Image (tube, rainbow, N blue to C red; front, top):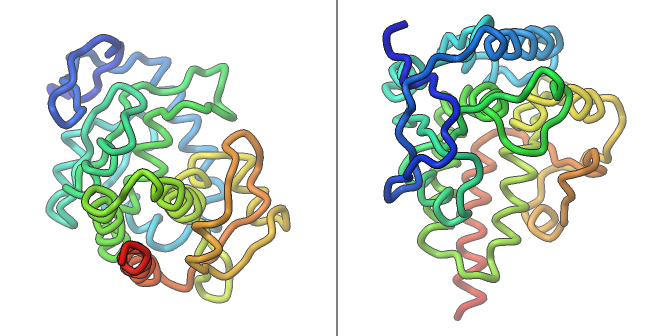
Length: 258
């Protein structure tokens, strides 16, 4: 492809713009990096076709995410933006929480451009493009989920005080990252941490964690750890439930401030 800029790697030290996004360095992904993507995608799809939510699987199809190479941002955005108004933007790894949430409020999803090394296929604590692009972005094609994610970002950007960030982090963790949905009488995956993880996803559906119906009060008061399999996960009935949760959290903060 001619637009190699969107496949940039080696981005350390590049200057961010005011929104925290970085320019692309203009380098293509290497054959080794493409093989890592292909290996990860093949292994995940072997199980996700039966365990992932229909919203996620439909998103993969709508975006036409390649299974044999790292996708380019322009290709993805050309399909994603007309559907829900979301776009993917490049960042240099982690960005500050407020910057991340402000980006969500504008339907811009920050993604790193780097992919995990072949020696760390099973687990990588830092974000990589497989987690961001494969795990997160297909869900952004679903109208209700896309609206929820923007509403979450707007709430965080406009109403959150310092004391609210634990609640925001927990809501994100137990939905966007590790969310489950009841679908057709079965529990299915939609959270990005489950889509891009081998062991965690299997654990979630194999009587590993305690599964509870989604309850906002429980979600925002339940701490989590990033270095262990999750002992507790929450199951939604539908994605409209997440939009309602954002509104309920806003009302909770307004009452507390009165």
